[in-house]
Amino acid sequence: MKPLPNTQPNAGKFPLVDYHYHAPMLNGSSAPCLKESKSLRNITRDYFDAEADREFISEAAVFTTLIVMATMPIVAGISAVLQLLGSLPVF
Image (cartoon, one colour):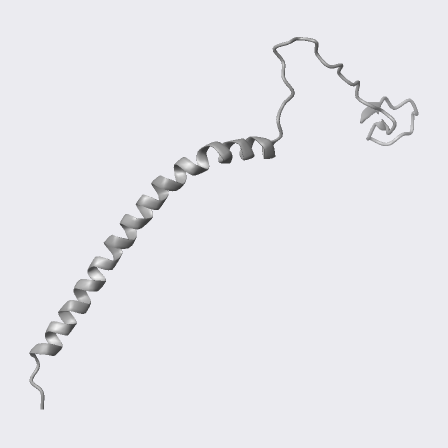
């Protein structure tokens, strides 16, 4: 909003404000190299359309490797417990 100068001698500290002020509109450019900007939604949609398939394969490989590495100690622990139970005398 465009402030107006105080013209009244006993006016307060704040300037008067013109509430009907409108910023000037810029005309469109006729330059052929300028393009209309894309919204953030369109940019992300283009990214995920192109990159999602490639990223999925690598992330699936990493996930599978992590699962295998996490189950190996569990299987080794279960095997050790079974060997311990097998070596105990039965009454």
